[in-house]
Amino acid sequence: MTTWSIAPSGRWLLHRGEPTFLLADTVWAALGGPTENEWLDHLELRRRQGFNALLISVLPIEHDRSTGTRSPYALRDGAVDFAAGDPDYWTVAERMLEQARERGFTPMLVLLWNNFVPGTWGSRLTPDHVLSAEQTDTYVRETVARFRRFDPIWIVSGDDDLDDDVALERYSSVAALLREVAPGQLVTWHDTPTARMPQPLADSGLVDFHALQSGHNEAWETLPADLTHYYRALDVARPIINLEPCYEGLGRFRGAARHSAADVRRASWTGVVSGAAAGLGYGAHGVWSWHRRGEGFSAEDVHGAPFPFSVAAAFPGADDVAYLRRVVDAEQLWGLDAAPDLLVAEPSGAVAGRTSDGTIAVYAPTPFALTLALDDAEAAGLEVSVHDLAARRPDAARWTAVDGGIRLEQPEFTGDALFVLRPARSGAER
Image 1 (cartoon, helix red, strand yellow):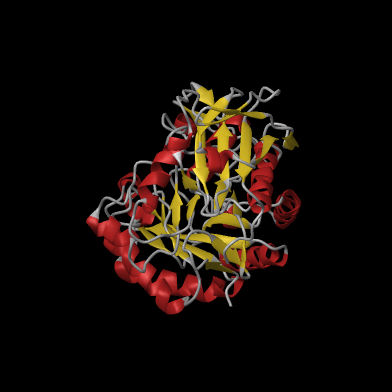
Image 2 (cartoon, rainbow, N blue to C red):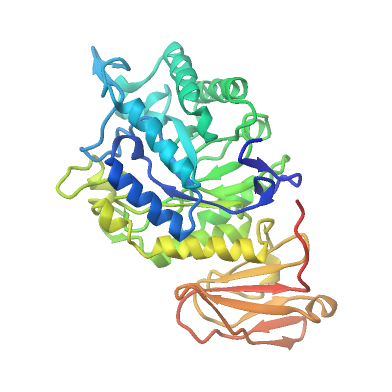
């Protein structure tokens, strides 16, 4: 039995048969970055915080790369040569993944970042890195043979727009190959904030759950809900995860600001309450590229210089999303669906969701009173709790009955809040 599977409802993930929130730390450059001691220290930190998965790109991300990372290939005559890279890369990678599994982490392995696929925006930046169909087939087969024993979740694409027929054909062939050589292991895709997976592909057997990227730019606050609504409306019900909300510390708007822990909480909770409640990816700017002090970074003009990985690993947002996981699992919120009609005249950006058993969750990015439209029968006997998300602790909720619903009174703390309203504690569907 594989570690992760899909619930019969098609709405959330099961870990060893139990509903569990997947919380992934983003370490794209892990296989080419850390020393063994650095890796073990980082695994222990994230294990203690409550992460249970790791987002890793098997091949380097050439357009977003810190200069000190290793590579399994070299370029010869303008083409990738897998026989000419770091000779220890694959041996070290296997040991790192073994160490991660020993500590309870599931590797989520991106096979083909878009630089390696024809027809993509990344291939236009690094055209000499595009793999042929034959190279791709050999590389995927060899990579699965090396790493299949670690029971990973396979990610077919990396940061792709999903709008080019040539690229979609290449990714689809890889997903089909995974069904053959890694039967039973979960498969998903990683895309850009502007991407919308075409419905025939999204509803096909080449994807097990949807992995969104709401991203880091102008629409970072609203895309978590908007993307979730798109994928929830498809014919085939699948779990939804926002694998890449804004990264903590990442520069945005080309030098105008950096994303804070509060930004990460807002993007993360907005997605979860809107229906992307099966899991979450978290990224710290400097950890994902495994950046060391004094190194260069290929995308500094876009994202700003990364922080040293040891500094970024201590950013508070990691504890915030670990608290998010604890709340979702404890409150059994994996099956949330967006319920915007619950909120009455709400301008603050609050979002509401509801599970099939009648539990309601409301995320409030700022502390205002909120009115929910509920009929008398639904409002009667509700249990209401509230979480102070910045402080990572439950607080005492106050609410009153009003005509046509209930009023959640303004919390007496200045940060964002999660309200949970339930008619009665009930068991979750398995």
